[in-house]
Figure 1 (cartoon, rainbow, N blue to C red):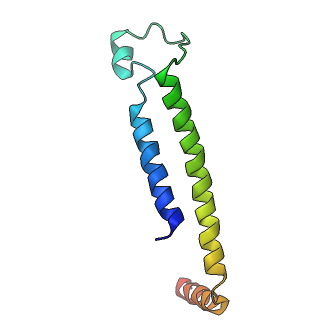
Figure 2 (cartoon, helix red, strand yellow):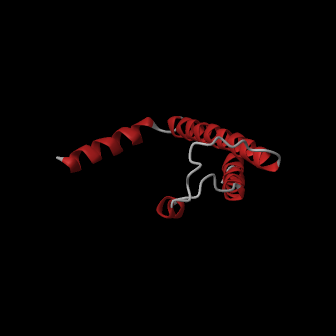
Figure 3 (cartoon, rainbow, N blue to C red):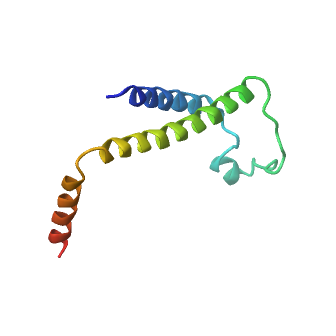
Amino acid sequence: MKWYDILFIIVALILIILSLLQGGKSEGASGAITGGGLNVFVKTKERGSEKVVSWLTFGFAVLFLFLALLIMILNTADKGSGDNATTASELAMVLRTLR
């Protein structure tokens, strides 16, 4: 396990925790059934800690996406520096089994 894998796991856990800390923004299905959702189109602004948690969630989501792409590129580069003949022979074997 490399350093970027550990960083990726830490960012994922932080993102999960921040997502769970966010409050619900609507009443859900129960409000639709009972008619409690009369203020459906009222715009409410996030204030204080809700806004901070929302921005942190967005930031960590962007970081999560960036790390996922970076790890994919680094793993592809590591495989590409290996023996290409092995990859070609594996591909040929897969194609033979598909016929």
